[in-house]
Length: 485
Image 1 (tube, rainbow, N blue to C red):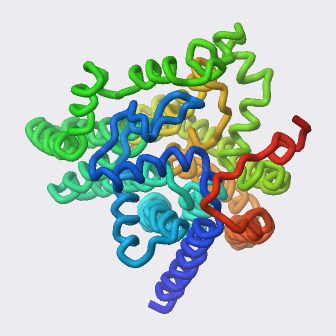
Image 2 (cartoon, helix red, strand yellow):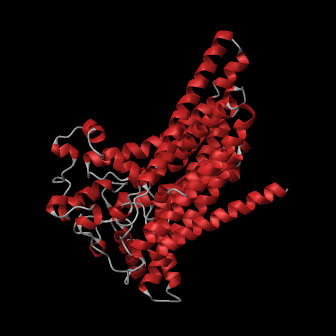
Image 3 (cartoon, one colour):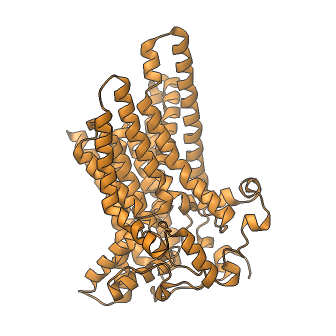
């Protein structure tokens, strides 16, 4: 009981630390320092002014540089931000206080994300050191903290992704009870109404849900009817809670239920010539192959850096030791997963040779195969969309477009590191387990130090002297990239 109490105190301390960090960043960050925040705020202001949702081509919120608005896409976060700001207007009319109230939606999404990731860690890992590593990899990554500090859709998508995975794992334990199915439907609805790049989790949910019932069917259990009843129940919740948005788009935009085609048409009409879809200097228009973009440019490096965290003006954010540290963690996790896969294939081959039915059953669990297939899809799809967007539409090597993969990606990183930990512990015999455990906690401490460093040495120096945080600042090329215009 004493050890359990210590764990609870440690978790509460970590929560206060990261939640306080996100609140502080939300407080010191000037308007539009987070990408496209001003365009999101204009949607919120329209809802507050007119009491209705804007259409995608609404002139009051149009960005005439790019020629479109974000109202073509799901705007559940902006609807909640409008509610928060309307509530705050009861007490104050200060412009920045109202902006901060809207940012609380992102901060609270971070709180939801924290507790669901913590619960996932308890389900996914037996060792306490790995549970801590998984949690800190998710909540102390500078970029995830940055997303929880300003107006965006990414923060809610991250919270939804953690919720979806939690209820899928819970469903695998309680045979997808009605309560679990209901919460899974709610989680999927939040995902649908938050961010298109997170839609890979819809496929993840289908694969894991199907895999559970395929496993039961393989054991001879009559579960086909249950599969359809519970599957349709989940789909019904998603349709009721989120389907209205796509029906609205279908009516408004001549059958374009996603709104993406109409957005491109709007951009072609209203954007500056250099930013019109037909005139953008993307890789396709310039005759650059995707291979060249990925392997003969700095696209991958820039995405990696901004996935870890490029905060404040870019020249203030380059800290090689942070990128190197996370790069080593990702490398260790990736090679560890490959090592674990090779080990599993070896066991499967040995079982085949021994013709052991029990060994074959252990190495070919369809539920586990579908579980990992779902997680891999959740990792791959945001990156595929990120690559294709940079290649075919607008060259923007930004790690935030890949952020929906965060939880499953960090699961594999943690699991891969755990593989190396077991190998090292067995190699060092009696002292190995203790040394590996201490090393794991040291890595966790390093990640917490990185988040604190980003606050003290990057965010605070960059914004402490900003007098009017509601004014959109325009940076020079030298301030952004360290080069003259």
